[in-house]
Image (cartoon, rainbow, N blue to C red; front, side, top):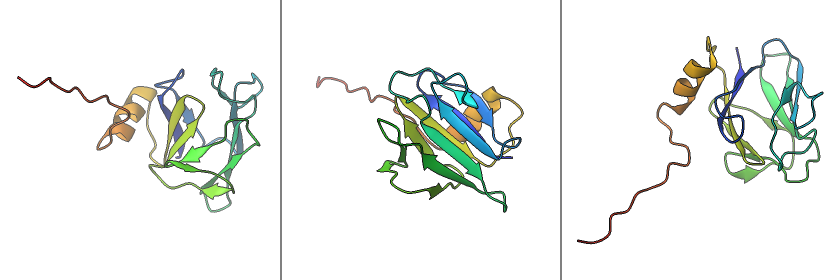
Length: 126
């Protein structure tokens, strides 16, 4: 089943399962399906809608700071693909179609083969 995995930001390590929902709201508001407390996220920032074929579409809910998918500003509804990286506020979220048993497994699964904002250490010349 599909899920959202927060890989960076205030809710790092959180797994949001999408299987039980046709429509998911992500934002700061406590009434959102998935709440992320991040000052740069709008109360109702992002919506994920399940299509009849099991795929998911991302929709920016006219958020103040916008939504990026794979580094591109989202301006229209966007069909999500496995591994897509969604950025809202200070939060980086990966969309996955893998069924993970828990958040720890999901973090390992989505990070394999990818690197999220790892800082590079430079040695001074000797």
